[in-house]
Figure 1 (cartoon, one colour):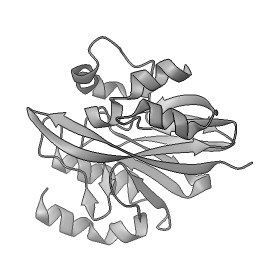
Figure 2: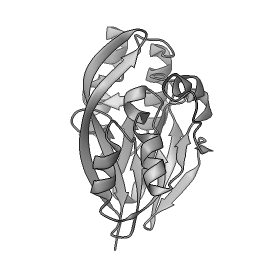
Figure 3: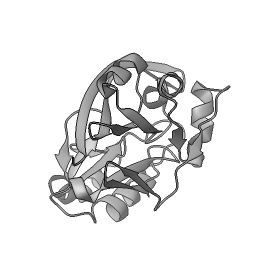
Length: 209
């Protein structure tokens, strides 16, 4: 059976730089009826485990280490035995949320993760966070962008560890070069496509945020 994409929305709090915001997060599950990978274990480990429906969880992949994307990762790892994977450049952010529990493995640019006959390619896309990554699945015509690219523009860069020119470069060089029909499945909100977002790059730069 070919890999499929399951989608779960969980709710909780994003906290950084002394502020807190209520957020809804997209949790993506890629796999078949026997095994899966979770992208961004946000807020509710029990709900994510229930959505796995008995499948073997091979890995918990973190697109970046803001607390709202990783807060449930240790609990989900404990329940399933799956390793938590994070780009090492985001360890300082990770330690703000989980000071006593390190990730189990590292993500690196160009690394490939295999699940249910589908390849996920790791693209290092810093800017929203230093270790932000996207996961490109050409076989599914999909890229999972975390908080790097949303419908209508880049992820936020107004807080610590972020940088607007860097995120624009990441999107321009790593994402907008993907086929225009590629589905963009984001960390929050609605999905979009590369073709829908590419024409807006100059406008984003002019807005400067």
